[in-house]
Length: 399
Figure 1 (cartoon, rainbow, N blue to C red):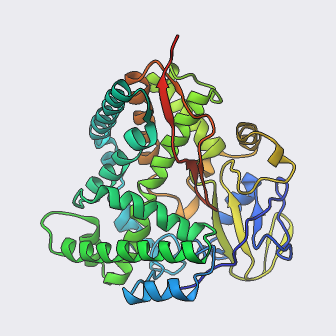
Figure 2 (figure 1 turned 30 degrees about the horizontal axis):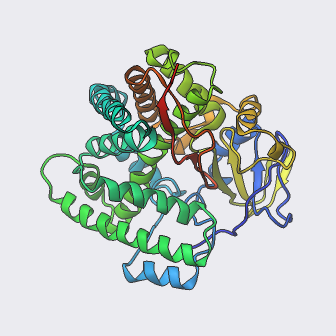
C-alpha cells in the first residue's frame, strides 16, 4: 500500500501548472481543458497508477489495522496501466450498457418518487428536512447494487464506509482520525470479501461472478469492488446534493420550479456537472519525461487534472470570492465532456449518474414545490477529488 505526499494544492492559471518544488503543492495542476484531455488520452505517458493512492501517507497504526484484515488494492480498473485493463473494463462495461441504463429509468424514478414523498412527509411532521439524507443518499446505492446483480442490504453501513473511505484516501486526516478511518475501511473490506465469496456461487448474473469467470482473484475483485461501490453511488449522491443546494440557493440558471420538468432537471444537472461536479479533480503521474502544452514534464511528476470547478484548487485571489462566483468563473474554462474523464479510463457510469441525478431532482422539485433553504452555509465535504454539501436542510416557504 502506498501513499502520495500530503498537501492541499494550489492552482496555476489556465493551461499552467504549479512547480513541484512549491512547498504546499505536490501536484502539477492542469486546468486547461485541451491539456487535461491530452493527458487523459495519453495513458502511456501519463499513467493512472496514482489515481487511488492515499493523498495523506498512511501511518503505522493505520497500516497495521488494514494489514490485519489482509487489505489489498491491486491495480484492476481505474489505476490499471497494464494490458489487462481492456478485458476487465469490457466485463464491467457489460453492466452499464446504454440499454441497461435506459431500462433502469422506471426503477430510478420509483425510488426517487418514494424518497421525495418521504421527504415531504417529514417536512410536514417536523417543519424541516435534510434532503441529502432523505432524497440523495440511498436511491443511488440501491440502483448500483441492483444494476450489478448484488443483494441490497446494509445500506447505512455502505454509505458510512463510502464517505469514510473517501476521507481516508482523498483527505487530510490527522493520525487519530486516520486510525478511525482505517478501522472503517477494514470493516468495509471484510464485508466486501464475504460478499465476493457469496457472489461467486450465487444464482444468476452478477459483477463479481463475471469478474471471477474472467480470471480475477479475490483480492483483485475486492479491489475493483471497493472503489466501484463507493464511486458508483456516493459520487451520484454528492452530485444530487450539490444540485439541490445550488437550485435552492438561487445560483443555478434554472429555478426550483423549472427543475420539476424533465428538461429543467436535465439542464441544471448538466450545469452543475460543468461548473462544480462531485468529482472536480483526478490524478495522473508522468510515466517518463514527456511534454505537455509545450512544457517538459519530468518522470514521476504527479499531476492533478481539474475536471470541473472546485474549491480545493482555488487560487489565493479566488479565496475571497463566494463559492458560487468561483464555480461560475471556473465553468468558463471547463469542458462538460471532461467531467467524467475521457479516453480509456472514462467513467463507465456517466450516463447512469446523470440520469439518476436528473430524475431525482425532478421528483424532489415536483413533490416539494414550496420549500426554501433553512441553512445557507452548510458544512461541505472538501476532499482532493470529491466535494458536496453534507446537508441540504429545508423548510416550507412562509409566503
